[in-house]
Image 1 (spheres, helix red, strand yellow):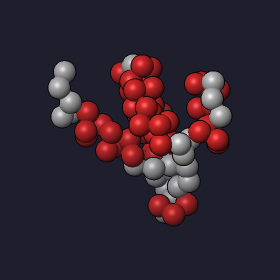
Image 2: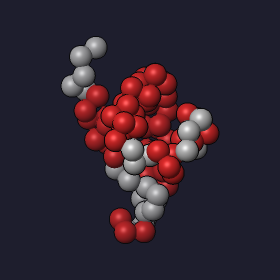
Image 3: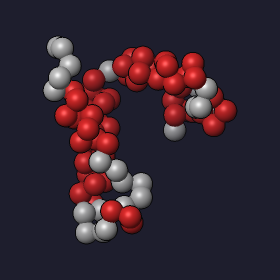
Image 4: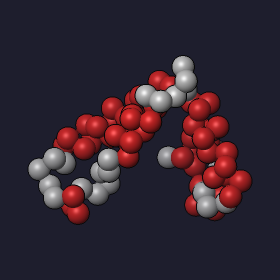
Length: 76
């Protein structure tokens, strides 16, 4: 999905240092609304897998909780 969205070969460029340094800027260009959509999607996925043990929750993670918590410290 990243490859299609940014018209790149993520498989080839995803581990490139320059790409990694620029990833925040690329994501920021998509705007806060996109981030909030991603958080909501991740939250729904997390809730849908709530009955499973953590080792079986692939592709579910709790990174959305970290992002949400860190957003509270950003200067508005």
